[in-house]
Length: 436
Image (cartoon, rainbow, N blue to C red; front, top):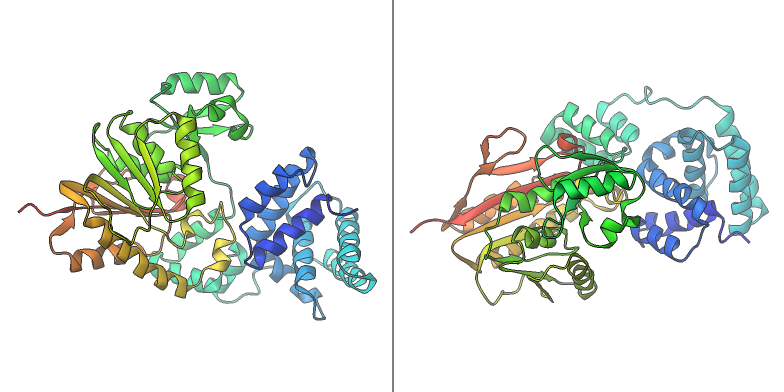
């Protein structure tokens, strides 16, 4: 039986994800939940799936010279998963990589398939690794080296310059910091630090955000503090949204596109059980996820419901957050398949939806209220372009400046790049109605 073999399961997940049928994190969670592999193999399964997806373009480049015949899609994915182990994992012997791949090929296909896989891998491992030096153009070399599609590499070089783009692309191959948000309605930050350290975690207090802790140790989702709702997992860049909003206690807040609910709960915690947060999303199953977290955190000031953010909201609010659906390129370290799935056409299509949601939400802003627009991407089309287009069409709105945490200077827009805080890429801006 192969179906509980860790590499067989990894290949099945890669098939689903790289053919655009599924998301890596959901497929991994499902496999772990259904005990598709033994507990001791969960780490290897995660490494194989994320690592192979993360470095797909690089791996294809490395193994390409050894493929002399037309192969089925699953065979190509088996080869790059095997190449990943050979190039990037030290503890797996070469013969084990080949044997496992040959057995999987026999099981998935036939003897002919297994012989082809065997021959390609033996040739690949017998030869010196192909270098990137033979790629003449900087943008193509960076694309292959960092495994970022060429159109995206070129696009970022145009907007950010080569050096910033290179730093960002290479950083996308490394894990971001693990940060947690302390639920200060139920525990103080010093108490949370003390309890985490006593549970074996290394903890560092963030220098910008009081309730943000950087942690190292076992997966925090297994810890009692997480399970009891005393802290939540949230990226530092994402935490900046609610921190910059800085809502006053007793206020009414609309989170127009709230799933999965991290910012909703952060805002509710800052309100300290006062006021009200209306959290809406178009997908019912995502509302269930928000409800679960609200209950776990014991927040009494959140109301959730299914709502299409392009349709009118029925009341006015002191604060509105439009955390718009976006291309998600800022979070590709966590969801590496994003970089292969999205195209420039997707970015253009999203721009129209984002502007429509922003226009609609703005109608529900109370006099003197503040409207925040954010995304987890680094695309100007989805960020600055949306906001400037909104302001051009809505003359009664204007930018409201806020402090850029990197410089302590006032700014109209904030584009955080992954290298700024070893976190996700994020965009935040704030507008308000002009005084009459």
